[in-house]
View 1 (tube, helix red, strand yellow):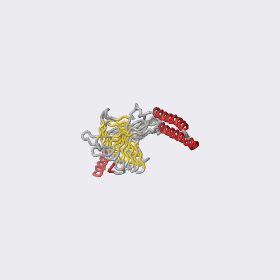
View 2 (tube, helix red, strand yellow; view 1 turned 180 degrees about the horizontal axis):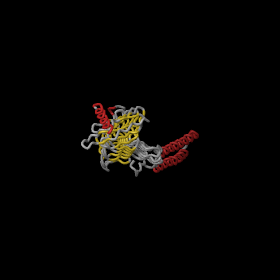
View 3 (cartoon, helix red, strand yellow; view 1 turned 90 degrees about the horizontal axis):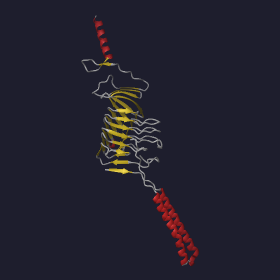
View 4 (cartoon, one colour; view 1 turned 180 degrees about the vertical axis):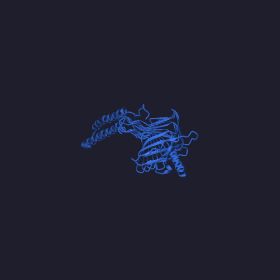
Length: 370
């Protein structure tokens, strides 16, 4: 049901040994050929025995060299166990080989305890396979790698109702200097028919990898036509880095993210004709988006758009806002709504501005009558 991929390790000692053997044998036969030509027809049994004795030590030396090289060749190394839960190809760092498990059966894999969890591993889901992460389960990427903890492609699905997903932790000596992404939703064939899909609920934690000497990893990356994520809840945290923190959400190239709840630590970036929908009572002032979801959880994040990226504020029927969701251009602040009061005999919210306007109309009517 799964395939484990490993990067091959080149045995330089064995290659060098074979080269030495080739040179030694070639030299021996050249000496034999020269001796034969010089002797011409006078080659006798004594010279033949002499050349054979000269050749045997060389062949024995070559064989000994090969056995010594093989004995000294270390076995392929494995990734060290990392103390911190924290994407991977060989990089020349202490991490020498990738740890990637591919699920491509089209079935549903559930991770909900220690036995079914993955540490120091990247999970790749493809061919319409589904991964369910529940409370008690976790997936943490290997240290020092540019692979995410989870990559979904070609119609695969992720559903997170609990548990943790941690991107790769970048040690100070890591040559790329960047923490890894936690989850990467990808359209593997640039068609809406093969796009990936994800749902997130309260209880799931998606955390980008930290990078003490570099840039932190992104929590959620949504990429490609038709690729879509729906966030009902959960925590999305960009990795911490000396040179900058990772994004809580990065959506690009016509991907879509629908946000109906959750908490977000780290900026959001929307670009390349991608779209991000925020459902609730929100206001956008430049790059700042503030407001409240229908479950009364507040949101205060920085959203940056470029190359056709768009943020759409959507009101919901179960929530009545003081003002409709609004957007203002950069450097033009939105006027805050008037404070509200709640009448004791009515649960509906009524603004002071509306009450003042009603009173003013009544006063004008009475004056006209008099």
